[in-house]
Image (cartoon, rainbow, N blue to C red; front, side, top):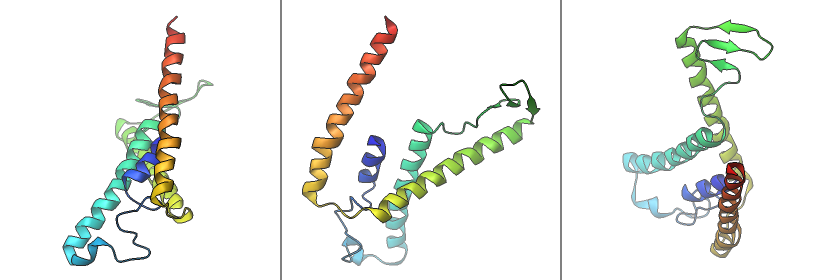
Length: 150
């Protein structure tokens, strides 16, 4: 949740769209039209796709499919389904693409449901919410690693 919140804030999309506020005003893109505006819009959307891809790779298992190995499916009860290597790669690519699309849908759902934050609300969320939770996450992870070592 920390990563997604920071990722949404980094993409400058609703609810963190302070620079443009596109739902109320025209924004700073008023000088651009045609291909220049298209390039700015594409860059904004690509930021969202990159955040979805990073979240998929880091937290959703990336291209991994349950029970799928390099030679095909190997189930815990002993059954196997042999697949050629291109089929395994295709399944892994489809799994990654599906996970990215689902993450994009979730990011769009957040954008559609949350209202825009004011500056003071965003700063309070960052400094009193996200920052302490991220420090706590680092400390707890370090304590778990230290406890596992001994």
